[in-house]
Length: 208
Image 1 (tube, rainbow, N blue to C red):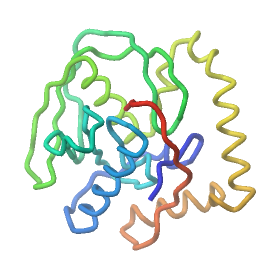
Image 2: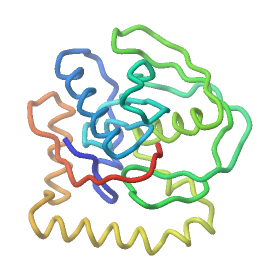
Image 3: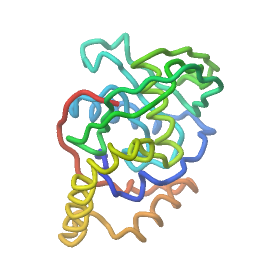
Image 4: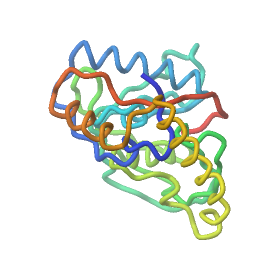
């Protein structure tokens, strides 16, 4: 399992709601926390590790020693948004890229925990931003889609470089071709036991 970088097709995949909580899911959650901490992230969505399912892990302290702050949420849905605030945002799938993005200041979320119990969370400020960022991921929406015109223009060079690096990795055979990745994602979604179609990872500053 690895964190995939833009423009990996998994990042545009609309994840399927989870219907089963099993040992495999628990193992995937553990791996995702390890990757998140290694990359100094605050949260990580399943699609960022090329898993086509609606779940995410979160620890807003970004500290692996703060185990009591670790949270796992399945099939999250934002049911209420209040206010707006613009602040700098980054993403583990876009290492090194930071731009201001406008988000709701407060959100209310309905989800399920790893025991299958329904939970309701009201989050503000950074927590609300992380929630919106990660739930977007589960629907194939990226933070670059939320940027204003100035931020989008300022990001053009970085995005082209991500695209170049991705193509080079595919040419080297380190990442499958897009058609093969999409085929593997569909097989995973259908419940087949295949390795996820992943990509590269690297450390970065703390961000959702």
